[in-house]
Image 1 (cartoon, one colour):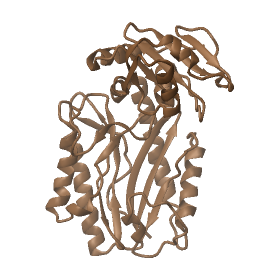
Image 2: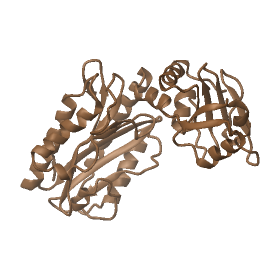
Image 3: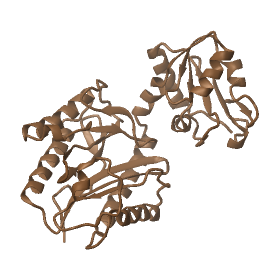
Image 4: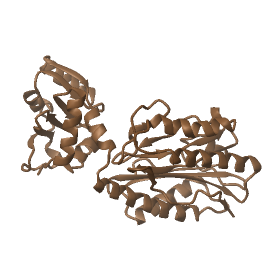
Length: 360
């Protein structure tokens, strides 16, 4: 049975009006789930939810998805030898049609060949903007996910020992998440030692830990569909003078940015606040990524927490604050929290300590 969440649909319809869109096709798995509560990984098959300005909703999908009629949404299904867009062609109206940014071109091209009267435009904004501001159910889910992440961070850091390699610790992180009810991660975890920490997206390998290494744990996974994401940097056996200096700069940048997060402020101000701390300390060129990203049903979703994002922070937004300094062939430090924008400021969802730690 297909039932649209009426409260969330109302927000999408408002955003459609703001964007000047009378009809849209929603096709990402996470956005369809957001509106229907149905999770479908279509792979090469077609999944689409049509919404018009009057609130008419129509779901299109393959027979293998297991949809059943009923609820408040019209349903069209097809099989593997049917033209997957045959019913979409019948439902959409002529003129402008907002298309999800992730819809495969093979479906869009087929639709346009059969309906040349349609003018496609990127139409993800109405759902993206609705998803940016979490409702209470989502906030509760994200709090629970971050609580589990705190516990997994503590348990996983305790496994650091002489002779361990990155992939071994990555497996321990995955095991700790699984034991606490996490969904299966499609991406793995980021665990890196020493010079490898200078690569923000280093993939764990068989590098063995050694004394004096910085150790980055960037751990993230969905838990009942809602993601957690946290990074902590610790040091093994000892921390040199430069390591300590860089660590405290990054921590200051993280905490300074979090201190200015509140409703009504453009997202770019948070990035610029953290970046100024690092630039003033002489390490500006070594902070080579944005401050963070939105998070919810997807690990990376709007809003973009960067120096060019003009989106205004609103209560209910959740995003990461993760400044870093990366010194090639030497070390890297990153500290990441998730924050929830509240009516008066922000709530940091992660509670694992940010004090400098040396693992003996």
